[in-house]
Length: 57
Image (tube, rainbow, N blue to C red):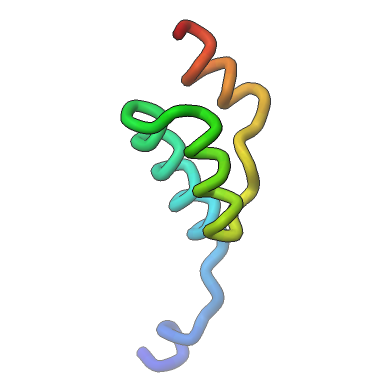
């Protein structure tokens, strides 16, 4: 179990970022969410995310 606990996980960071974007877009403005992502060392919002979550507003 110790070996398994120490194993590097792939995709965990991307999954967390995706959840933050999906939930945050409902409650937070585009510029503020983008700054929060940058402050947390995640990639900024992508063009297709902006179009999907903020395009209709």
